[in-house]
Amino acid sequence: MYSIRRATVDDAPTLSALAARTFTETFGHLYPPQDLQAFLEEAYTVERQRVILAHADYAVWLLELDGEAIGHAAAGPCGLPHPDVKPGDGELKRLYLVKTQQSCGWGSRLLETALAWLERDGPRTLWLGVWSENFGAQRFYARYGFEKAGEYLFPVGDTHDLEFILRRAPRAA
Image (tube, rainbow, N blue to C red):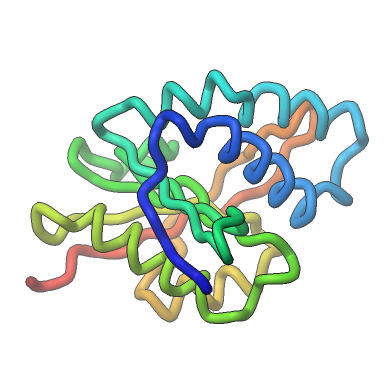
């Protein structure tokens, strides 16, 4: 049975392991091993996940199958490097499912959960970053009204990926 629940600080070890696994499954083949390892050790440590999970302005959800975490989404204030980002804008920070669970429909539910949380106080501009060559993800986000608004370089160790910045204008309530 699938379920989505808001993660708590106690979920930091689970989130750390899941985030490292899903990033590696999705993008690990793109990087030299030392770059991948450096990124994982910076971005997905248990302590870093605790900080995110404890922060009032951020939220993370776990997608579970029979009690096992198989996906996650994270959202919070927009931190993307785009000149039109304004205070109060929201960002989908991460959305990943383990490879065997992709295209099962639950990624959409996880995204919808994060978007609803981001707009809980009313419509606002939403942002996200996506790898320039992840065409499936770009099509997925386009179905939710996200359009390309810019680009930036995303560091993974000494490698820098071209990322697209996607934006969705506020929708009427």
